[in-house]
Image (cartoon, rainbow, N blue to C red; front, side, top):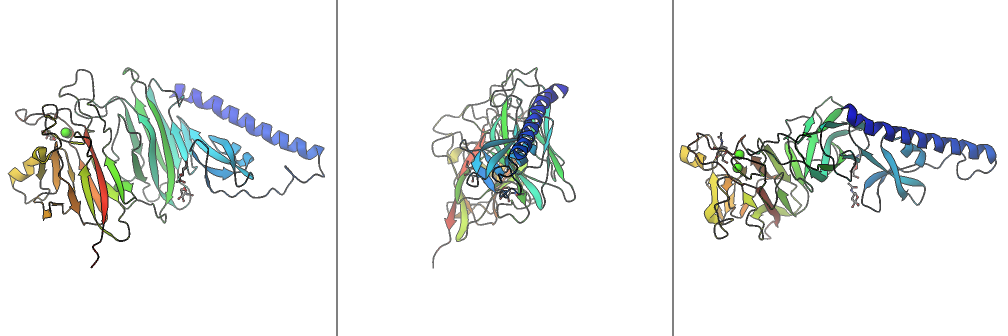
Length: 399
Ligand SMILES: *[C@@H]1O[C@H](CO)[C@@H](O)[C@H](O)[C@H]1NC(C)=O
Ligand SMILES: *[C@@H]1O[C@H](CO)[C@@H](O)[C@H](O)[C@H]1NC(C)=O
Ligand SMILES: *[C@@H]1O[C@H](CO)[C@@H](O)[C@H](O)[C@H]1NC(C)=O
Ligand SMILES: [Ca+2]
Ligand SMILES: [Ca+2]
């Protein structure tokens, strides 16, 4: 904790000195050229505080140079509003607090890697009208989970938010999460815990966007993820193209994160009536959720033969429930090959293309707390990678 603070102090001091220097400069100018109204002379023209982005694709807020220097973590990065202001990008690391709309939360030394140690936190205070955050994992590489998929040595966690958000670890660049503020609270804390006794080069850069309740891209209640395009892909946390190599792990090789229970939602586009989910065509491992993935070869993996389904309803027979009782995805009112399926849970090592008309469109994700068989006579899950499914919204039929 105190070690992490050491990083923040020189930065804050440097920014403070910059701010003081800028102010001193401004005053001096005014004293020397009291009659020349341009440049620093009052009243300054207002800089519109609109979103802007920099040449290296960072999102910021257009501000006056002076205001940017006053924002914690604010760094001027190029001009905006036709040179009237600077694009102020807020980038902060451990032990900090921010209420800027776009805040980049990075590991100490980013873009370099971090060897790990302790808990690194950022507190996000919400802006007026905001009740939700979107976290974009531009970079997020932490140590892999243990053999059961539990994020034990390293994890990103969220506290102070409305629900129990999943702890995630491993490789998550490109993925995202929405976080809701509970009514009446003003702040949420993001923490990255890393265990320095596990040798690993960590790196993270998380873009935090503040979303008003009235914003069109506000995620519906209960959606941990929200996709807004007509086509895209939904990928489980830590999905990757290789099995994990957690040392000495038994069972071996899982990348599938344990203890998940969430919904990935898709915004129905106007004129679209259903959604189709399918496995990635060029990746036979793109649905490996339960069972022993390591023993299957290319002729079986990713085919209907390796796909399983089960039932969520309490009335389901024992046999049907057993098919997908630990780790599975849920697609409501699922249709496969033009027929409603008996079950709405899908697991195994293959995924049959499935459509659903239930709106808003969603995919449920559930994993239990282990990959070990229980009772021990049941075979364990081995080398599961999770899933990466593509979706396609289908236009309403024209009559
Ligand atoms: C962030 O910046 C990118 C350009 O780098 C831009 O395309 C995108 O629209 C910006 N995002 C938001 C939410 O303003
Ligand atoms: C933050 O930026 C996003 C993207 O530009 C915008 O939609 C949203 O309204 C902004 N939030 C606030 C609180 O200004
Ligand atoms: C967890 O789920 C897997 C199936 O994905 C199953 O093999 C295992 O027995 C379950 N563990 C327990 C403790 O129920
Ligand atoms: Ca599994
Ligand atoms: Ca499991």
